[in-house]
Structure formats: structure tokens, C-alpha cells
Amino acid sequence: MEKTVLMKGNEAIAEAAIRAGCKVYFGYPITPQNEIPEYMAANLGKAGGTFVQTESELASISMLYGAGGTGERAMTSSSSIGIALMQEGISFMAGAQVPGVIVNMNRGGPGLGGIQASQGDYFQATKGGGNGDYYTLCLAPESIQEACDLVQLLFDLAQKYRQPVMMLGDGMIGQMMEPVCIKEPEQKEYDLSWATRGWDGVSRERAIINSHYPNPDDMVIQNGILQEKYRQMEAEEVRYEEYMCEDAETIMVAWGTVARICKSAIKSLRNQGVKAGLIRPISLYPFPYAILEEYAKKDQVKRFLTVEMCAGQMVEDVIIGTKSLKPIERLNKLGMMSHTPKEIADYVIELEAAEKEGK
Amino acid sequence: MEKLFTKTTALTDKPFHYCPGCTHGIIHRLVAESIEELGLKDKAIGLAPVGCAVFANEYFNVDMQTTSHGRSPAIATGIKRALPDRIVFTYQGDGDLASIGCGEVNHAAVRGEKITTIFINNAIYGMTGGQAAPTTLLGQKTTTTPYGKDGDANGYPMKVCEMLAAHEGAYYLERVALWDTAHIIKAKKAIKKAFQYQAEGKGYCLIEVLGTCPTNWGCSPLEAFEWQKENMLPMYPLGVFKDKGGEE
Ligand SMILES: Cc1ncc(C[n+]2csc(CCOP(=O)(O)OP(=O)(O)O)c2C)c(N)n1
Ligand code: SF4
Image 1 (cartoon, rainbow over the protein chains, first blue to last red):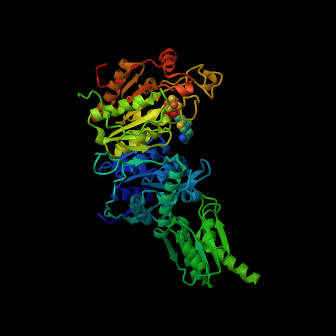
Image 2: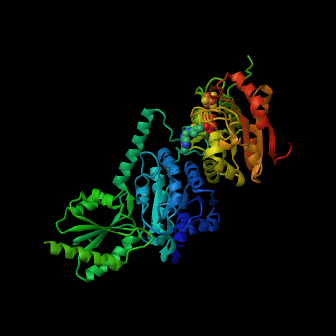
Image 3: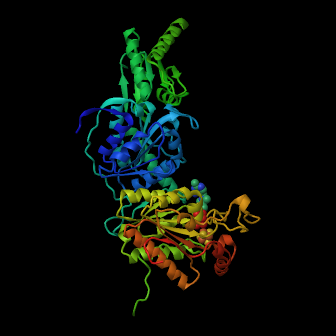
């Protein structure tokens, strides 16, 4: 079954989720992710699961909360505006410790924006997004293969941490076609004694899924439990890729499809004798701060360059990670339009020239 | 000695926090008794609303989820679709169900979700201190309709059973009251039937219970029932609005 095929991103992600054991999927149409609900409608039932087209993203995330609270593997997907509507439910899932997988194909905004790719929802995805003191574990793929691998991993991470987890892609990941080999991962068994599955009165305590803590002492305890979990994720779930960084003088930092464009730029820079590299955060929360600090401390590294398809959001995490030990340059596009490799390469050459002149 | 009455084991021993004379307590008992008598206790998963019954998870002695305001029917859908052989019920006030959760309840009925909703219509927001609900009557004074509810300015009373009856997916809808023993017995029968239908895999069932809120209506519990008969009954007549199961 595990063979390489040519597939559209959204469809491949849906198939990967089914193979990871997704039992229920809830979704409301929105471009650029419509092929996910469509694929689920056609195929999840055949695999023994259930597809529900919801009346709104409010309903999608509420259904995910309910299903996640039974301990079954559940998923929803949407794009920017729909994810904004879901913030109520994501916060409830975080507070009540409910697992569930959310796929977000970032499109242009604010407001209705447009359907092309953007990275403008980085803050929303990585800094909580809804009300209260919480994080959503968030992974960002740069290719369809990685999207499939990460969505499968996310089903496990959701169960492991009893957490809402998100894959943050964009219209490019969703819409392009690439060869992909979708794995059939072994499904780990998790303790479900916390889950609401019907109670026989003896085999465990009565299960209550709850984020309501009117007593301040209880609220503090519950938030402490959540924070401990976030510290554990920060210790164990940081993921990133280092690309040609060993001798790099310019280190680009970029995530998702833009990171891929940076790699092309780096290849062409290297051909011109320019020492550039890339650190690509794969986990956007928890963010790979430590590796940035490590490189920031190296004498060889002259500058960082953040490349984003928004006015600059991830750069704030780069500032934290590098402790501003080196200059941080920015090359941003305001979304719906991506950089070309040449633009990025030219900008690096410009930066180098400016520095030489300055000296 | 012969034992004539025992409290249902589908309720915990935790004392209710409800105001004296509030009908939430009676309704909890009727729901819990129905679940136990039908032998559904170990399959039941209940949803506590946002409203005065927000602590229902501490009272119903079954697996429970607390919910976001009004979303219970969608959350229940998620549970039921994940575990179709369980018995899933929502318990919702009129702010929760008729206002902020109006979309969720309608679409649960449209889809014919095999869940049971207990809907408490007390014509007011209890928990937040007596503001107007969609079910508030014309002329009724609340903290947000201090001069009496005016249809053109504040909207007209919303009839939930009548609205849901339009949906093919709704299987059983009945409005009941709790004024006296006869009505309480009738209410219990309706609630039990709504759970029975779910156990048989039938479609969406909702029982609308006319509740009282003596605290925010500003009257005694007995006066509350009198006020209800006089004012709510003409707008919200009791009866079966739909019963696809037959005997009406
Ligand atoms: C999203 C959101 N908006 C508002 C509230 C505040 N709130 C809590 S209870 C309530 C009204 C509940 O009234 P009702 O459903 O009629 O139940 P009752 O208290 O009368 O039993 C409101 C508005 C909330 N918790 N969440
Ligand atoms: S405020 Fe009203 S609805 Fe709430 S517990 Fe008191 S009487 Fe009951």
C-alpha cells in the first residue's frame, strides 16, 4: 500500500489522516482546503469512519471537542477565517485537555482577504489565539510529503498531550501536486480513562471533560497543569531543519513553502560563492529558540534574514531566539504573493555589499 | 419497612446550588430517573450548558462534558458520531439554546442527530442576572428590557418547538410544564420517551420544559407558576409538536 503516487496536497493530507486512524472528520467548505472535506466525504466512510459537513466552523470545532472528548481520533480543517471562528472551541479544548487535529491552510487576510497563500496567521496559530493562557502545538510542512508525515504525527501528539494540535500550511501546500508516499503508521494505544465513553460506575472514576473552574484555587491548579504540559512540549517537541548552516554567514529563517524558496535561493547563492544557510522551524510552537541562539553566538554568522509571507510575525520569535546577538534583516511580502528565489538571493548579495561599503 | 422512594443513582449526592423554587432541580431528577429506569446509565454522556445549570456535570452521575455557550448540540454530535451506540443528551437554557446556540440546535435537528435535548424555557437569562432571552414575552420587564419587551425594538418571543417542527430530521418534540404532580408525571413521560427513542436509534428529540426563575422574575415560587400559567402558556402552549413514533 505504501507506494509513491502523485497527489494534490489537500487530498494527500486527508488520506494520510485516514491512514493514521482518523475516525471522525468535521468540516465546512472554504478555499483553499476544500479537497480535504471532499476527500473525506468520499473516502472516510469506506475506511469505517464518519464525515460530517458542518453548518459552520463554530460547529466543526465544537464537534471536534465532543469527539475528542471520547478519546477517538478526530480532525477538522479550515482556512484563516474559519480558524478565526474556531478560536472559542480551540480554547475550550486546551482548557479541558481535549485532543484533536486541526489543519489550517493559511490564506490572505485580514477580513475576507483572498484565497492565495499567506503566513499572516502565524501569531494566531502560535500564541494561543483564543481566550486564556494556552498554546496549540503547531507544525508547519514545506512539502506535501512532509504534510502527510506531520499530520500523522499530530494524531499521536494530540493523544499524547491531550491537546488541540494544528498543522499550519498554506494554499500552496494544499493545491500543488507532488509525488508522495503516505505511510500506514502503527496506531499507539493511549490511556483513555479520562475520556467520556460511558461509565459503568466501577472500572474508573466518572469522566468529566471540563474547563470551568470558578474557584480561583482550582483555576490556578488547572493552569499549572497546562503550563507543565507546555514546558514538556517545549523540551520534547521542538522540530527544525538546518540547511547548509555549518559555514553560513547569512542564516535565513523561514517556515513552510517560503522556506523551500529560500533553499533554491541558497543553492544559487552558493554557486556564486555566497555562504548562506537556512534554519527552518518545523514546530512553530514550540519554537526552536535554542538552535537560533547557538548560531547567533558563532563568530562566522554575520546576520539573520527572516523571510515571511506577511508583514513579519515569526521575526519576533527570531529576536527572542537570537537574543539580538546579530542583526536581523527582514524580507517580507504581504501575503498572496510569494518571493522568487532570485529576489531572495539578490537581497542577500545587497546586504553583503552594503556591509562591505559600510566598513 | 417497605421502601417507597429512593433517589435515583443517576444523580450524585451533591446538593443543588439552585435558588429555592427553581425548576432546574425537578428537571434534573426527571432526566436522571429516566436514564436509570431505561437502563442507560452506563451508556449515557451528558452535556452541561453555560447558564444556571453550568454545574450539571457535578449532579448527573454519568460521564459529562461541560460546553461552550450554546454549542452543546454540535458537541453532542461530535460525541454521537464518534460513539454511535452511546446515549448523548444536552441540557440547555433559553439563552444557551434559543439565542447563542440557535444555529447549532437547528442544524442538529436538520441532520436528525440521534441525541436528546432537554430545553428549559424560563423566558429569561438566569445566571447573568435576569436579562432578556429570545423567549422573553412582549411587555415582560427584564434588566435589559427595563420598560417591558417591545417587539419592534427587542424582537418577538421565539417558539422553539414550533420552529424545530419544520425540520424533517426532528423526530419528537414536546412542550411540558411542572405546575403540579399531574404535569410533572407528564413531563417525566415525555423525557423518558425522548431517551427511549434515542436508544432505539430514532432521530432528534427535544423536550421543552417551561421552567421558572423566581429570583429574576421577582416573585415567590408559587407566584412564579401562576405567572407562568397566565403569561407564558398563551405564547407557549403545551403539547406534542411532532412525534414520528406514532401515538399522539
Ligand atoms: C460566549 C459567551 N457569552 C456570554 C456568556 C455569559 N453567560 C453565561 S450564562 C448566560 C445566559 C444563560 O441563560 P440561559 O441559557 O437562559 O440559562 P439560565 O441561566 O436561565 O438557566 C450568559 C449570557 C458566556 N459564558 N459565554
Ligand atoms: S437564577 Fe433563576 S434559573 Fe437560575 S437557579 Fe435561580 S431561579 Fe433558577
